[in-house]
Length: 325
Image (cartoon, rainbow, N blue to C red):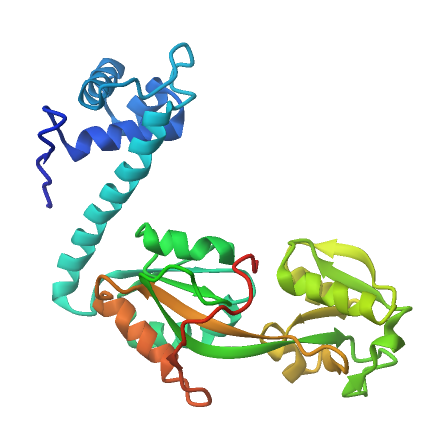
C-alpha cells in the first residue's frame, strides 16, 4: 500500500492530503455531495468537512455558492486540474513499484483515434502472446487531444498523425499510410487500379461523420477539379462505412490500413484516384522527462521492430494538423 501523507506549502499554512483531493474530485465529478459520499463510502457530513478544510487551505470557495456542487469557481477549476495530475502521479508510482516484478504484471494505457488503431493491432496481438499478464487499455481519443492526455499522465503512449508542438514529448515515426477509394467487387470500377476524379461525379460516397483535415482536403480536391462530391450518407465509424460499401450502398475514401483485411479477402476493392495523393505519417508519442515503464517500453520496441518498416525518430518540424480525428 502506498501512503502519501501530506502536501505542505508554507504560503498556504495548513496541510492537505491526497485523500482530501480525492474527495474534492469525486464531488466535482458527481456534482453532488450525497452521491460523492455514496461513491466514497463516507458520510455526507464527512465529505462536507473535507471540502471546507480544502476551502480554508485555498482561501477561496471551490464551488459557486447556491449551486450546491454543480458549478466550480475559478479556484475550484484550477485545483481540479492540479489534483487530477497529482492523483494520476500517485497511480504512476504504484504502477512503477509493481513493475519491479518484471513483465509478469502491469498495465499500459494507449490513446488512439479510430483509424490509427488498425496500425497497432498486429503489434498488440504479438505483445499479448508474449506478455499475457500485462493489461492493455486502449482509449479512443481524438488525435488533437492525445498530446494533452500524455502530458497530464492519463496515457503512457499516444498515436497521432502530426508532430506535436509540445517539446516535452518524444515523437517516433512508425507507419506511413495513404487514402484510397474502395468499392464492392461487382462495381463498374472494381477491376481498375486507378481512376480519374472526373469519372466519379455520379458516384454516391459514404463519408465519415467526424470532421478531419483529410476530409477537408478530399472535398477541396473535388472542388478544385469541378467535380461534384455526393456525400449523401454519413456514418460514425469506419467499420460501418466498410459494411455499407460491401452492401453496395456507395463507395468510400478511407485510410488504406483500415481496409487491408477486406481487400485481401476480396470483399472490397481498393483504387487510387489519380489526382489524390494524400499520405499521412503515424507517430508514437510519450513524455521525454520520465522513462517509459518496462511494459510500455517493450511495446514501443515491438512496434518499432516491424519487419517491413523501421521506425526512426521524427525531425522536429510541422506536419499535418493536430485536428486529425
